[in-house]
Image (cartoon, rainbow, N blue to C red; front, top):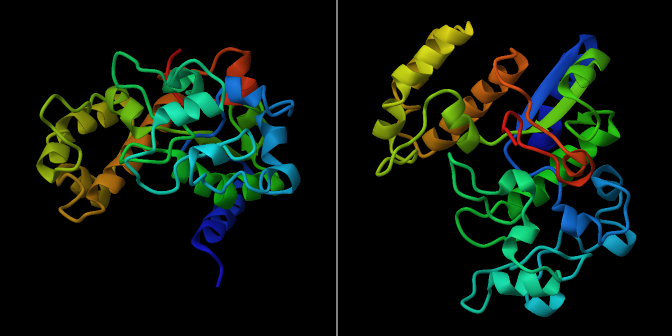
Length: 273
């Protein structure tokens, strides 16, 4: 049976045969520059080709204990434990603070809190396990088939002109403010009523941006993406897409800047430096 991720990539590559396709994924694409420089690779793209083989065969195996954390095995901890602390990551990677294990695009902004470090895999806000799955099931296979990674392989304009599949990192939490659908104190995207309360803001954004919704999408927006447990995920997927539209339509700069973003860290599409 063909894995769902492979079928999805097949669809993306088929659509990209006669032009350019931009696909956004809500997981980190890149590593902190402080970590990247310890790998002896030249950049994230070259490191990606090595992961899971040779010296890097244990890269995707999350460390069970602090003593197992290393450059070659950076993720921690594999299971929930009262003994697991972010200080273990800080010490093992030889940095001064957890911020040194964040990419610059993950620092706190005026619109949101700082993201978890890529290498921390414990708790509801962790992103490490999504990165592990995403790099193995999507990014590496797509790169092997010729996909380009923004911003590592160039600006969005340059990549679009070249054609083919372009992959970028998106973050729905960043996109909320881009379309005027930010959640206020006391609100939660986990509640259907709170998601539905953003319908007018989303429809106003769509009207101002020249975006037309199908009846099905309009119903989803108006109804807060339903009362099913997947409603939160569908809401985030839609908002991530709207954030991408903001960029490709020219209403918002793509955002990546600096050598580290293009060499090691990547960037969240549409986030301003």
